[in-house]
Image 1 (cartoon, rainbow, N blue to C red):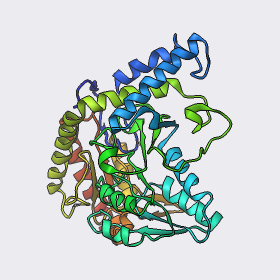
Image 2: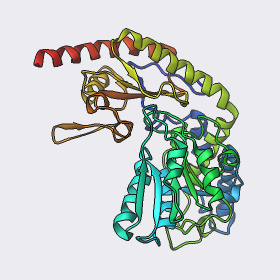
Image 3: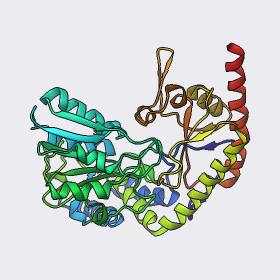
Amino acid sequence: MGAGVESRTVPGAYFDNNATTPLDPRVREAMLPWMSEAWGNPSSAHRFGQRANAAVESARAAVARLVGGAPEQIVFTASGTEANNAVCAALLGRAGPGDHVVVSAIEHPSILGACEHWSEANGVRVTRIAPGPDGVVAADELLAAVGPETRLVALMLVNNELGTVQPVAEVARACRARDIPVLCDAVQAAGKIEVSIRELDVDYLSLGAHKFHGPLGAAALWLRDGAPFAPLLLGGGQERRRRASTVNVPAVVGFGRACELAADELSARARALAALRDRFEAGLGAIPDAVVHGSRAPRVPHTSSVAFPGVVNVELMMRLDLAGFAVSTGAACGSGTVQPSPTLSAMGLAPELATSSIRVSFGLLNTADEVESFLPVLAREVSALRAESTAAV
């Protein structure tokens, strides 16, 4: 249980915190005035607008402090997807068939999709580097794909499905020596582990409030001074002419407060979350043949990706939901077929193992009691599905 976050007593538990986290009550308290008695457009010159602008700038400073940057390097966006898309558009939008981008094969779809778009639109060549069986992309393999025509390298700090930490700093240092910009998606890392732009040495870094108990609809892009950039949204001078749009003051204020709390409580949160994950993974010993992906690699403290061979993960997720427990599959289900997770497939896992995997991700509202109540239910449902599968054969 994280400091300052209230508990609740409900059947089951929410174990899908990598998708989004519940709002910290202290963050909600900071936001409420800006949804009631306080208002104003931060671009307005009168006192209402200037009060809102002061709140936005205070939040900007808090976001910057969390990653070790300067406030003027922070551009507020509506999502991590927007931040990532903006960088890709700025660097690849004017690129052509002779240009090249290198990305990991386990990047968020906001980066993979953007690269695919500019490949189709402009003929940019895209090289995807697969991770090893531990879920980590080898820095030397990624760097071997970089050439003089490379316009962008993208490597996330933490994979959203596996929780594995990627060698961003090593890649960024080598790319800096070649004057190649690096985009780091830190959405699953910021507020959960220490994120330092000085240590990472990247050119662009994205983060989002709702992954660490802040509000939905507030995210940011950190830009290194002098890094090439062009606004994705046009028509206004907001965000130092880097993003046209009226700032969402309540969400940005909440983002700033979430950053303050995360910075103050980072070590305590990591210990609490690691204790929950470790207890969960220790309890998996009661389920035959359970496989924890990436368990030997550096990982964030709150994420566990587990396969249960002989089980279809979508069916398991639905049964757990009926029992009151929310988890994720990382897979897409359509037309009666279950597709393996692209991340797990990129690791080289067999389809039957990938399609039996679920993600369990912990947050500050989770408790040890919830983990203890979840484990026997998980074992029961896995056993039942395996029995049904055997009977069907």
